[in-house]
Image 1 (cartoon, rainbow, N blue to C red):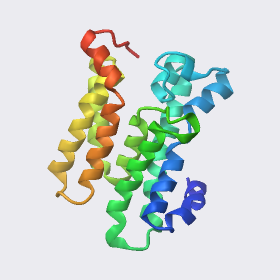
Image 2: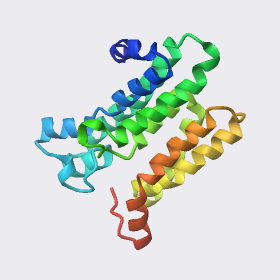
Image 3: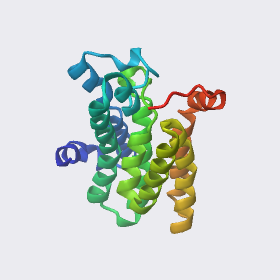
Length: 209
């Protein structure tokens, strides 16, 4: 993690635009695609949901690589946030820029320039960003996800239930501040990326994982 922080330091020190660019670049690293190609000679974009995230990796090449992808994708959200936390020189701006970094890491994962903007759905990256900035809210989100998934065995349903509950938990625990629009935007991107899953859930054709 320290090497990532060191590599991103020049961009982070370049100002808010540098934060956005650095977070986007970290978020855009397609770990799922890279791992599946390296260890299973499989292009996850050509099977299952066509997604590069942990769920599709687990579906196509096994749960072990799926869990590794999950962890690395979560780090993509955590590293930019932590880099801002430790490197940003103006304390009063840290919280808002942490939120911005988390948002752009999710955008990078969902729309990576290297893959013609066809990426994942942002869940693991969003979890990493949220746990790094608002750990209690993040843990509530993870708990909600785990409960729904344990009951129904559908990742998409768990995500769609947990995302709005994350916002509710934030408003319950924290005062409204400048990070709220960014958090709402991040959850919105994640929900929109699950639009096809919503259709399948309504049709009762969504696969269990």
